[in-house]
Each structure stands twice: as structure tokens, then as C-alpha cells.
Amino acid sequence: MAVKKHGRHYDLVLLGATGYTGQLTAEHIATHLPTNLKWAVAGRSESKLQSVIAECQKLNPDRLPPSVELANVNDEVELKAVVEKAFVIITTVGPYCLYGEPIFKLCAETGTHYLDCTGEVPWVARMIKKYEATAMKTGAIMLPQTGIESAPPDLVTWSMAQHLRKDLKATTKDAVVTIHKLTSKPSGGTLATVLVHFEHFPLKEVMEATTPYATSPIPHASGARPRKSWLQALLGVTSLPNLGIVTTSLAGKTDQAVITRTWGLLHEIPSRKSEFYGPRFTWAEYFKARNWLHGIAVHFALTIGGLLLVFVPPLRSLVKRFVYQPGEGVSREDMAREEVEYRGTATPDIDSNPAGKQAFCRAWFHGSLYALTGALLAQGALTILEEDLELNGGSYTPACLGQSYVDRLHGAGFKIDVKTIEG
Image (cartoon, rainbow, N blue to C red; front, side, top):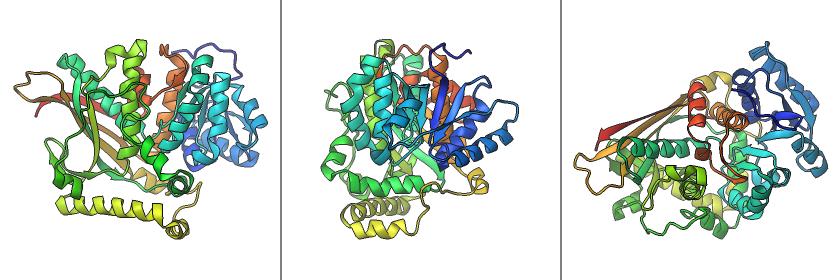
């Protein structure tokens, strides 16, 4: 499929290409996107950018290398010059609460389409509030949180809901996503973001931003919420049909913000109304536990650890000394052994369901989570470049890119399989 015609110098610019995630994104672009793509890598150091280009050339010597654009994220003049040259910008420069706003603002103002891989929900809520109207005027499609946080659960949920519409002619009542398998270690950039997050955002703002449907363009008026027993609320662990023993998910609040925004967007976007999940939709995410004791231990570790990081600043300083630093991560050999798998169920919102039918989803990727993030960003950019998405300007979620995005990711190694089962 051909890239859209446009008046920009580049189809795509990758900002932050010398970082851990940025380099993996550059490599995915070099090995998976069309060879006639006009693209550039951007950052502060020309020598480091040339090293990234050299690695990309080793992986795919048959394509033209990207151009180099020098830009400091703290210099708005330099940054604007790069943004104005691009039809699509991917930025992997974090923590986004420190470095992300100038890029987001310039893309919204110049009509440049935008993708990032942040998991900083309060920051995303701020950006939507400040720049949504601007992006709507310029036509910029803004896609924050299009990495491991939080595209996979968003696409799993969307796929299950569309399956129910097609197979059972029903909207969705309850959807559950579990991180079924995870063998990965966080990069230095992720760890730095987590630690800065607690210093940058007031607790009240974090709680408000992570409230279900906080950034949905419409309120969730039905009052429906995922059901929890008092024992589950206390211990964090429960057993779910077809999903097994599950416990609290570290990414639950982060992912919830995206999925519940998707719910509202699908109701409001004219071209997506047929994909709306339904008025009584509920959503929850869990982590697969080996057994009940493991589940309880995970729940209390996350709860107590989170409280300590919030309220004991010296602990954050101590943690920084013993983790990967920004730009660092696991070795290539270790990345090859990593994998992630999601499973989910979705219940149709119909009065008569005698067989207890559900949609069941299994989604998986073999390799580094950061390589998956690179694929999610690059394939998202390609979807914008090639597809008529029927989206006006504004802030969207990964699921708003639709089936063509899911299909591209399937070819890139992130597989999503949905079927109907009896509950």
C-alpha cells in the first residue's frame, strides 16, 4: 500500500533514536517498514545517531539509510524545525513529564501526527486537557501510550468486543484482560520514569487521572463497575473462569485509563460508532498468579512498595543507585528469551445467554517488551501513513487505529487470536 501524499519533507521522524527503546524502534522501522519510506532519526548527538544508523544498515543493507536531524528537546526552535518537516513524529524521549510537552504541543500546533510510548497517565491527562482543541483544529492525530503501556490490552479488549458484535450480534458487558505470562526486565528509562513520576505529580492528580473514565469524552452513566468480593479487595487474589487464579496487575491503573477512554471515543467518533463497546461495559486487568499464596504476595508487594515509593523520598534515591540507568537495559541475548502473553474474556450484554458464551482472547509476542514497543510505534505510524482512518484531529488511543493496525502487528509478531467459548 502506498504512503499518502503530503507536503512534508519526511514521512516519519523518530525522536530519541539513541535511547534503549528508540534504537529498537529504529531497527523495526529499518527491517519492517517500506524501503521507500522517507525517514529521519533525531536527537542531540550526531555520532550516536550515526551509530544507530550503522546498526540499522547491518540489519537491512538493501534500503536507504535515514537522514539525521539534530534537535534538543529543550530547544523549541530546533524542535519545531524538525516537527514541521515530518508527517508523523514518534518520540521515545522520557520521562515525558520532563521532556514530552514541547513535542506534544508542537505536533498539535503544526498538524503533525504523533505517537509516544509513555505510561504516565497524569501527564497524558494534562496533554489532552491542554492541547485537544488545538489538535482538533490542525488535524493532528495524537496517539500517546502506544507502547507496551497500554496498546496490547487496549487492542485485546477491542478485538474481543468486535468479535462479540460479529459472532453473537452483541455489545460487551464485562471484559477482563490478564497478563498471563511475562518474562522481562524493565529498562533504565522505565525505572527512571516510575521514580520521577512520584516526585512530579501530586497524589491527588494521580488519583484523579487514574479514576475509571477520567479522560473519556463522555461519562459512564450506567454505574456498572467490575464486581469484587470483600476478600478479593483485601487480598487482591481471585479465581476467574477460563483465566485461572489472578491477582493485582502493576499496569492495571495505567491501562484502565486508555481502555476507558477508548470506550468513550468509540461512542463519539462518527466512523467508529459501530465499534462502541456498549453502555454497561466494565473492564478489569489482572496478573496471572501461580497459586493463591503467590497472588497474595504480589498484591501486598505492589501495595506496600507503591506506598513506600510515594511517601518515603529517601527510598526513591536509594533505588536509583541499584537499577539500570536511562538508556540501559537487558542484553540482546536476554531480550531474545523474553516473552509476554495476554489472555482475556468478554461477556456479551444480552438477556439470554444460556450456554454462557464468551469471547476468549490469547495475544502473545516472543521477544523483548521494548522490541514490542518499537513494533507498536512503527506499525502505528505506518497505519497513519497508509490508511484512510477517517479520524479528525485529536487525542486518540491505539484501538482507534482499528483492524488494519491489528493486522500489521500480526505480521510484525504480535499475534491476537479470538474465539467464542462456553463459560
